[in-house]
Length: 462
Image 1: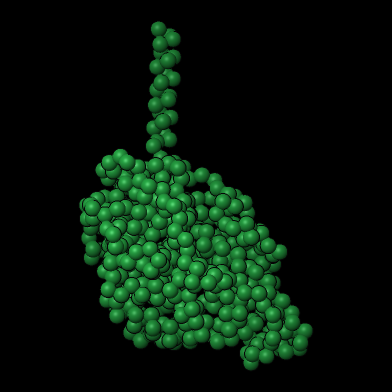
Image 2: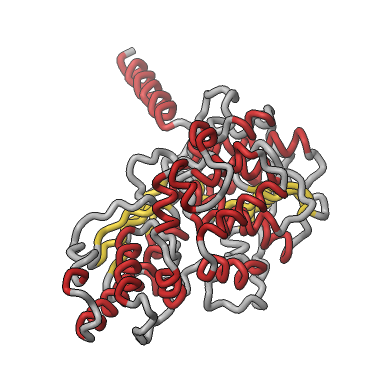
């Protein structure tokens, strides 16, 4: 009898243990070397720490440099920050040259210096931003009343009206889009615009970096060098970083806009393009005043969506993008737009951007339902499972004949891949890569082999 009770006790403990773990994965600890090119892992002035944490869709990296330490969420943003560190180092050398040449007033020499080995927390810091899949896809168990909380809502009006970063900002926004008028609507955004002059943009172009960067150290260095070289007198050999990510169709035109045009002209252009594609004024203003989108991100996202003439669902996409709550979310939407442009030109013509799902899921020629997601590593967590079920339900209910495709800039875990395949999704890993400045536009990315869906009938969505 005692033996039987002992066996039953072990069985009970086993059941309890299984219940505690549940049918889901815990995001693993990952290696930076599995996601970043080897040349990006370490340089003369920085190192990317080898261990990476994951929240189920985004990786968080730590960059330790001579100019500060950054914690960055998302692989693409980490690559950009790494190139910015190299730009900072070159600009500091320009500082020394300018001072040695005697072309700088004594009072300006120390501007922006004294950074040292401090911890810098720019906008893209990964601290206190929560679970990326919750921010983008919604939390398990919440209602569908707000599009920002559950993107699978069938309420299309909610997707447009409620997924705003801050409706109060929309109410206060100026009707006239000039950098000066924007001060009244959003001081932070206006400071970004007014503080960037033609000389800063010129030096940013020399280094192929974002002149409107939220990297405080780089911004300060660009500002200082621009002050030293207001007349364009300094001649210094610089090595371009090549870190600005672009889609094939927008490489030259968008970069020229960002580097060459005055910011108030870009603000006006953005507003006009949004209006022409049917975005409501309050949604347009909320998107443009969301502090997660600096001017460069706005230009890139809008330019990419603007190329998709006659494609349904563009205003809804902008409304969802307006709800970005963290830097990684804004980058996700920018890259989603760029990938849609790229997919449309290099893979299959797009007819619609599907409403009610985060990012860009598109309907394309050949009866294809393709979600184009710039995500790092998908682990099958409870919230990811709910997101996959919502995506599958949307596809099954509204587009039952369409072939389901998931295009990822990263990859899923084996478990996540298994669950996706069971629901009829064909997975394209590390696909539709965006290109950087040194890439040639004519070098269209090669199509990568896909992981076909399982032969089994797709499981019903929960």
